[in-house]
Amino acid sequence: MARRLRGAVGLCKVGNQLFTAEGPRAVQELAGLGFEIFLDLKFHDIPNTVIGAVAAAANLRNVTMLTVHTSGGLAMMRAAREALAGRKAGPALLGVTVLTSLDAAALRRIGISGTPASRALALAKLAKEAGLDGVVASAHEVRSIRRACGSNFLIVVPGVRPVGSAANDQSRVASPAEAIRAGASYLVVGRPITAAEDPRAAALGIASEIEPQL
Image 1: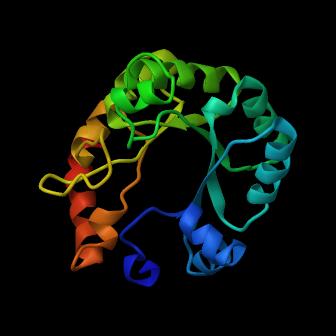
Image 2: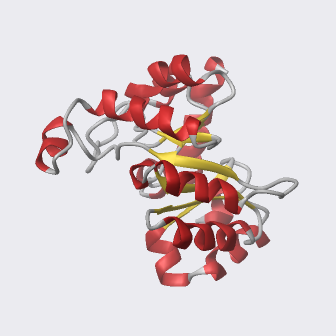
């Protein structure tokens, strides 16, 4: 799949499923094909453990972005930032706000009050206070986060679905053009590309859709 997509996508995301199955070897293989890597492992643990995990992740070849969960708290996020201190060109550190599979009802069931939008904004502000480079948030929260956190704050948007695509298990989705217009820095697109009959054509189609918005 990666070989088919060379030249059609900007980065490759390595998430929990691939990393659990193949470990650092997956990153090395993709880096060997020339890809920069978005290492989306969503670290969420005590600060000392997260320091070690982030430092190890940052040492992997071509990792340019990696994630922690903002719900781990201010101290944990600051520890993650500390793990990258002193690097001349360390990876961007992103905080995952509210998963795009969660809606208001799902948040209430796990004891979190408020709307996904209000929670994502509060967590994005906390991430900025901790010194993170940006956050992962749905397209529905991008405008408010951009206003609150500034033009240089990275906002990575998952749950991107081209018009006519199935939402699958995502609750808060947007089209590629909608996400870019809202102010997204990066888009994460998985199944609309990987499950397409022609993945390369699907990726190029998405690129064509967002180009007028850039």
